[in-house]
Image 1: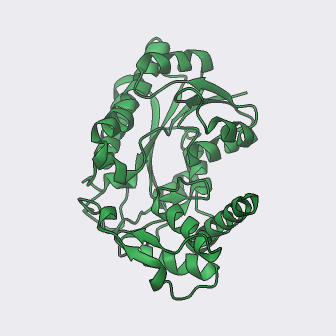
Image 2: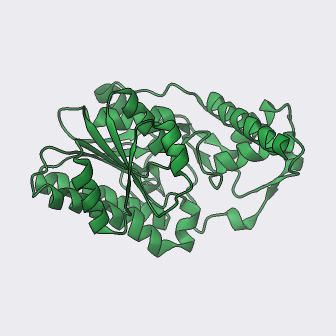
Length: 329
């Protein structure tokens, strides 16, 4: 039975990946930060048989302990301060967790493995935010980076560090440059889930409006459940490499609002959406769209859930959740 260690298992990607690995016969270990973590019950419900280990990406000894206990064949480093907007307000913590956290996981593997890294396969969650102020469209594996947020800078550090450990120590290390991927499990601070939840609440009469930032911002949005399959496929190859994972389509926040409100029968949403300067970024990334040709050709991967289906799935899930909560009260 193969063994996998997942950092960030309480996030949407960690949950989907844990489910996928259990379904493929893995023994799954998940790193959980802090005592009495409220998300533990969700992990245990969705990832049956998971072994949870206490640890933190800012604490190297805890990571060494997690590696020694789990003895993993595969390590997926998904843990991060992942909300881009927060990274300006907590830049140092973002650097320590999202950037230096990668170094600590890699060092934990090197130290616990006694410099023999040949047995372990490592996946690093890189990000389309590394492209930032894009140099070419669409973005591919060879596109230069120009990150526009502390989060993007930290992810760029972790990406290059993963390449360095691959070249320095022969570690089977892959980075997935994942473009925006969403799901009903996305945190409510992210704009996609913020919109799907607000639309559900507005349709149920629980909320009057939603405040957003730049409605012209365009992103390449896919389904998180599809993207974790690409992560797994990377670690099954004969040679480690880095891959862009994306749909190749770009949509604006306005288009997202169109689909979300239409799902609840509202065609004109202008009276429900307010523009709030607080939600504009200090340095904006206007358009991101990925070219996943390499992932299609080498990994045999392609997205299954389209943009409209994704948005409608999220609205439906929030409708069910909010209606159930309203009934309880």
